[in-house]
Amino acid sequence: MKLPSSARPRQARCYVPAPPLTRTGSAAEGAELLRELPGERGVVLWATLRDVMLYLSTPAAERGALYPHGSAAARRAEIAAACVEPELWGPLLVVAEMLEDPAGASRARLAHACRAISRWAEGRAPATRL
Image (cartoon, rainbow, N blue to C red; front, side, top):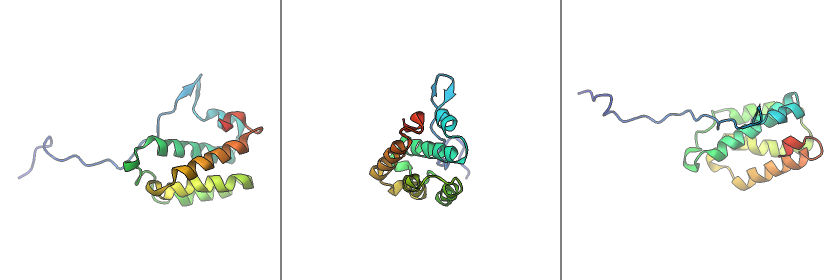
């Protein structure tokens, strides 16, 4: 016997959208980062910002399957290709590690990595620092 569609159990979605972009003025969130740091380095930092924002906006119980398989390896390759400064390697790799296991990621390590990126940006890119 087939159940009517209204009585069937709903299947959970595997796709979690990124948090909405907020606007300050007419620019999208993170746009100032891309203006300050054009090129691959800026794109890697912007993607890192978006990944951390998605992680933080997702309830802990739902973080396990947040990023597709292979995201961490892809991000590590992007970091290497962007030729980022040595002081950015560690913090960016911490976020890449979070992509591999968001459920087991340490919020303290992520916060430390974000602070390190912010310190790097001081004097170089004021909007990125924020």
